Image (cartoon, rainbow, N blue to C red):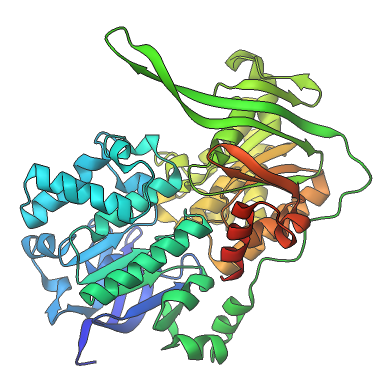
Length: 531
């Protein structure tokens, strides 16, 4: 393609695993014109992120091998560029949004400093002007209270807010090409719509090209001009968006398009007992000021949230990023201090300290939103999944290994890979490792904080079916936090809608989504139906 900004020709990338080189992409060829959006879709582990990271040679130097092919950016082969030339491209000419923002942001530096730093490196902009531009970009990507967030550390932001900071950092230098690796994964539907609209607006203004990696086909429908589909390291189909969705030619593409969230929640037998009873839950973080560091105010994260979760039931928490969903979940597990009543299995646990909660910990498990930061990079998969078994059960090595292998099979992972480390797995595979770690103890309750957000459509389908099967078999109860209302509707019997820490509406999921009463809920449902 002569007018292409980026052309990848017959790219094969492998990784050294012992002596032989293990190829993970096989002769991938694609191109992107100026101002065009190419969506790259496929299952986790299909080679999407490897292909994208190869463009700027961001793959691990020690193990990655570029076996054949070329990557031409504006006529220049990036595989032959010097490190100095690559530094000029990275962040300047080519921006990149990574899948896991917590691993990409420096935990020691405030958000504003990190945004200003990239402006200083690539544009030579002075501090005051850089701060003004950074603040403007935080506003553009929908960060609430941007003046305060400029001086916040990454861990003080919600998952969605961290992702929006990453988007601002990638776009602040107005690159010619944006590589977006799952940029809206952690965002709720309303902010997702804003970000996609922003990206399209910037393309129109700057003629920016975009390589958009995603597992969410609803986003592909909205933003892509052309679509490239990958399976097992190979490019199996490339066509216009209209042709991909109206007449997909490859069986794998047909299967991806057909994989919608499965069915309805599992039926509940009779009138089960309450497992959790939460009454007027409140989580307020004190703001201290002055010489004496007295409390001068509060950040009201959650205010007066009440609900009942029955045995074998799934309750959904939905709302925008920063609405208090994850804070509510952490509070009922006593991982955050809170006020109000929390009764678990008839026992008041709201006042229990760490030691008092120990007998309950094996019965209460959690799957976090960001799998990479939740998995110890120095531990093998077997050690990660088996860690809880060592703490809570007295098993022989053989019994422990058998339970680890079974948990991996349950989440569609090959037990033969249990001696590998988290960095050797794709984002979706890492999330399945986190789910296996929660399942291995056979708990009564699992807090699921965006457990399918990093999974592609087909694996999401498998995991939801797995969660339902386990719920029916063991009578599990779930508190399910998600911004994907279609997934919530598939799994949850009852749903709470949160906004700014308050419950604006709650009720049976089907009624809530088909006859919403609150204006905020109506807007969320409308945005979800557009996907």
